Amino acid sequence: MRTLEEILKTDLDYICRKADFELGEMAGSGLAFTGAAGFIGYYFCQVIKHWNDHNPGNEIRLLAMDNFMRGVPSWLEALQSDFIKLQKHDVIQSLPDAIGDFQYIVHAASIASPPVYRTYPVETIDANVMGIRHILEHATETDVKSILFFSTSEIYGDPPPEEIPTNEDFRGLVSCTGPRACYDESKRLGETLCVVFARYRDVPVKIARPFNNYGPGLKITDGRVLPDFAQCALKHSDIVMLSDGTPTRTFCYIADAVVGYLKILIRGRNGEPYNIGIDSEETSMRELAEMVARNARELWDYSGQVIFGKSEDDDYLTDNPNRRCPDVTKARTELDYAPEITVDAGVRRALEWYYHNQEAPPEPGPQQ
Image 1 (cartoon, rainbow, N blue to C red):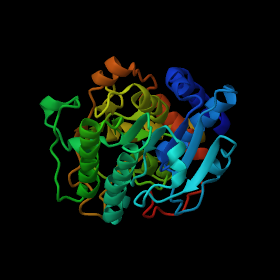
Image 2 (spheres, rainbow, N blue to C red):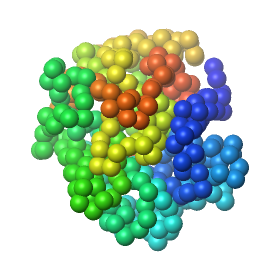
Image 3 (cartoon, one colour):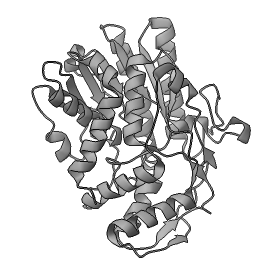
Image 4 (cartoon, rainbow, N blue to C red):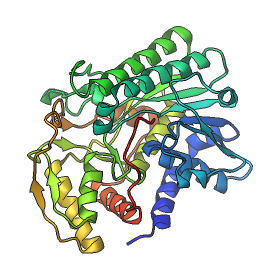
């Protein structure tokens, strides 16, 4: 089994190689990142540190922003340097003065775990709508070069078969009153704000629509399917599927995803959304569970089985799409986006990372 350091170095080298041009474009400039203590921030911030360490004289300044409601993660504290600063800030409030010196802004502060955003629906809406509104208003008054807003593939809802793989022109089949609406609809409104500010106020904002990212940094208590399966495997208990196992997803490993996000930030067209994911491997929940079990057996002699169960939450599967698969043609042709890491390889790396991070953090709260 690889060490934690080996996993991270492999992924950070990969990201810096595939996004060398984009990182080079930011050299000597400043990047402000909201939600730095979250899943996407885990690799995004470490990539900046990795780039800086290997490119002396061409460093990127990073302002890592978060409300830190559960404290500052030790991995993020360790990144602090002359070029990387932490800033405690809640995105629903006006932006701090410090952000005025940063040419690039990534808004990734949001609650993205379904169990958590359903517990904190108002906070979820505020982060997605008020957070991006503050940033867009800021950009009308300053010399910002590029903004990236993190939307979601959830805005497509449950597409009909003829719309799968789903491209950016599909308008979505989304409930505005269902249990997921606080997340889905606030992301949709966030996109509307981005498009309006791009068209009518010339704000250089771009939109990312992630499709089922996973990997190191995604907390084992997050409530999404892979961490749940990994948690069972680490406890040597049976892996419990809370569906019939047939829904499919295209899982995109975080290293490939971060490359895509950097490409949108630097190369994307203003006001345009881009799907980021993989379109080559639709994986069913049953296949994912078996993949986790097989890799866990090889890594730490796991002996459990994959079984079926039922969630105590009656709304657990409400508005849950049966299939989710992106058409990434737009990102491939416009951004030179080319994900390479297979689901099996990514799942194995994720399980190795979870093995080295078995101490569960506090349960999620209303943080960005």
